[in-house]
Length: 171
Image (cartoon, rainbow, N blue to C red):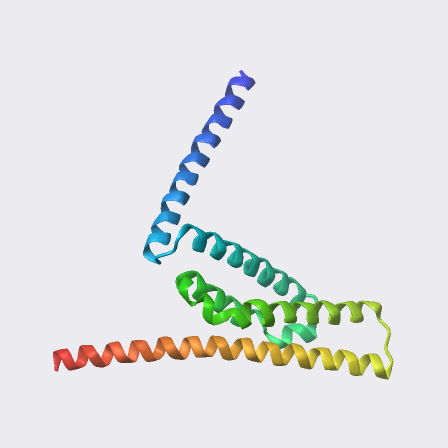
């Protein structure tokens, strides 16, 4: 009896996961078609976005380990850019500096900062070094925030333009 119930459950899970996989593939193909991506473009895009997602999650984990890093608020803007890139994959070429420089550097600096803080040694030189690292993290964070603000500003301008076109058409 247990074997039959267990087998039935496993069959149901396989069936359900098969449906989910089919739906995923269907949605993926729709996404690929909508955004005019070739198979190789889609594969590269998925690889880049998967890595970025892992980096943002890791950055969030690192940020939550220190009060000093929490004050900088570097994760929200990175998440905003990530969401934008999901919606507009063609914009990925405009964010190469964000993808290949800013995010990896802010991760390295955050790791280094936490590593020094975990050692719990405090000398004047160490304090200067940690302040320098925090300054670097702030600069990178501000740069990421500037990128995100630029996105928001562009979206706002597009909406305002659409509004003006509708008003002209109706007026």
